[in-house]
Image (cartoon, rainbow, N blue to C red; front, side, top):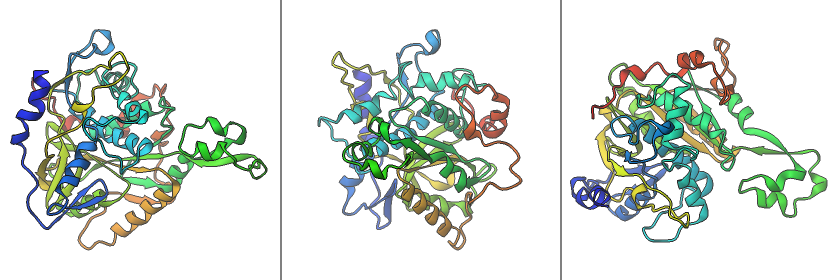
Length: 392
């Protein structure tokens, strides 16, 4: 209990509050004024799920580490960006966490998907062990690309969320591939079993005669785009484009950080990025006998950290969530407008069809059982040597 107390009350005064500025504050597609909406900003930040180092959880793989201190920060950042996708999927972007308030079952289902135990969909155990199949030993550093690919594989087992996860490689987003991944048909007779918000509509009074053969549906999209925005430092020409990503309503934020230190970036103010920092070790949390999860330590209750955007390591992964096809179409239009910003360099290319020079199959077609680790290594693991494991 003492360790958890130190995490909040003692450290609260070591964090700088937001500067008194007329510059807007952007948090995952929401615009705020720090002069008039400071409480709203802090409530929004606190409502994001915050994953940090933990200690004394069940040994990974039965005999492995019982703490991820010193090596798990990028894995925790991956959990945070994916948790934001699940919150948007099941609770909505406008959902807010309030200390002491009873939450819905969907909230606890989302949180339970990340608890530090072997049978949670996106636990540190699952991420670390899935990484073994990609040539990463347990306790080894992951880069942004690697954690994105591992989470994509784990998402295939999460039938409750039923997400379509696309990793856009080679700095190129191919619209045709995403539509093919997200669009699918579902038989009318089984529509009531489909676990999405649309299920009530489909199973209650939908005219059977109009349901000719199959219902065309859109699986909610999690789009992750691994990028390298420079050699050793971020190229200043990308900064405005990166800022605009936080302004989009589809934004899931960015995972990246400084050399040797990963962060989850959720917004910006002026020339500073706003982020949640996983570098705090807290005791592992277990559900109570009533299956209730003590959740206060999963919400950052002090002002978030900030850093100058020029300090950002160039290896990042940008995330977006499109719940409906209209959201994706809107996102595409916003990305096209970004190319018209004077002095801003596009971070990636948006194309309708796969360019002819793409000779390799898309990584998204690989299944969780794929043993083609060498091919995956060429796709997404090239940047990992740029990071080092923190010394304990």
